[in-house]
Image 1 (tube, rainbow, N blue to C red):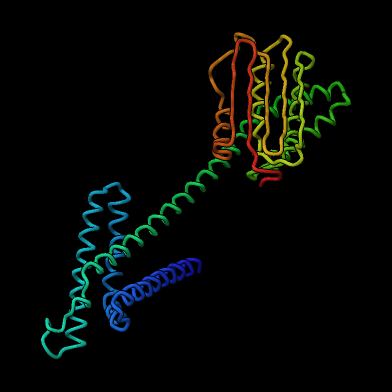
Image 2: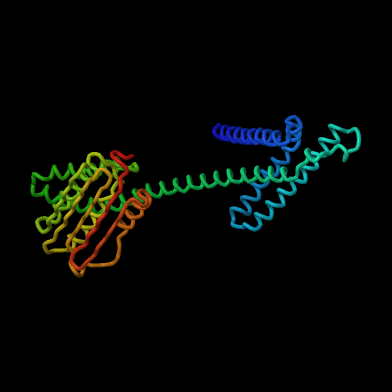
Length: 350
């Protein structure tokens, strides 16, 4: 049923195009020759030539030569097609107008220059073919862009799912170990840990499947993640999260900040038995979000390699925000820092 509707729509569009072309040519040639009746009959018998030349161009020359980069062949075939069409038009006009309509008398004596204007015929056929080619190429380009956007959207979704899957195993393993230790001690913090784990999993699995999420939820996700990680590192890590600005009015890409926080704990705290620190600042403006995270780093930890998580979030940023973000990463001897600036169109942008 959907295919039938698509075919019917395509047929109607083509009929509308040729109706507009026909009316336009009647008005153009009729005004020029001051004889609308003759022009009307002339166009009725020559329209098959226009239609044949046009469809040959857009369905043969365009896909076979123009879209494959064979521009010289495209021009040659186009000129050949248009000149052939003009010749056929003249033959049809002579035969149709002077043999069928006016069979009496001398043929050449009946032909007048006003009936066959070669320049007008050439201009007309070229205009119609070029117009059809422009429409065809524009439509193909639009379809190509739509396919590209669809593929990019699927890529974003796949990368988001990969990011979730990448985070789950070691995060759950470490957190459950901490929870197990708390239950052995019969700590009052155990129920709170269970609630935070439940909240994080609920958010990651069910609430951030769309293209945008509330900034407040992303901040809460970071806070819950930090609280759980602090159970593992204990007093040997100082973590500060400072948030300011109208965070309740903005929306961001899902899991846009968490990979940087996770990276800070993984490389700045996990393998560091000495005292370490992590500072996180998030400043929200009506049309901009400034995120900065720094963590201490031992000299032997410094590396130029970039993890899969960071590559993933960079790729997603380029697709979602395009040129409306800035990302700066500094890796010095003792400090690893990330500055991310996101440009937002406006409050509650969806």
